[in-house]
Amino acid sequence: MVSEVLKWRLHRGLPERMFHLREARGAEVDLLVEEGDRLTAVEIKSGATIAPDFFKALGRLRDDVTSREPHLAFDPRVVYGGDAAQRRSAAMVIPWRRLHEHTW
Image 1 (cartoon, one colour):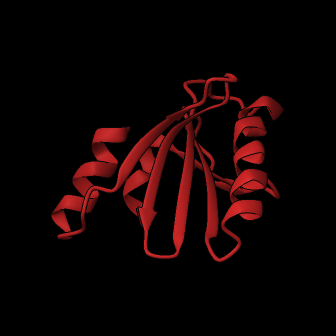
Image 2: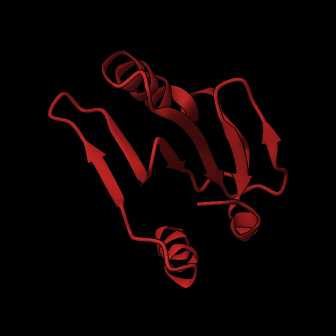
């Protein structure tokens, strides 16, 4: 999944600006993409059924980012193994087969 996002960015002449976050206290977000005033945070899940815990790390990171960097637009996303794209209050949910339909 990360390599697909990287290819998407490089084919459009965009800089990589992609990171993985793991904090000492255990918080982890699979992919961060920084673009100007926008930070896209992505959790990658293999499951085909969306579960509430898919959104926990994104919520913690959102709270941290908005308190420290209020000027940043925070764009949370979950990429998963299911088929339905949907907008949830916590994040945009994207099937991995439809990555190419989104801006990274």
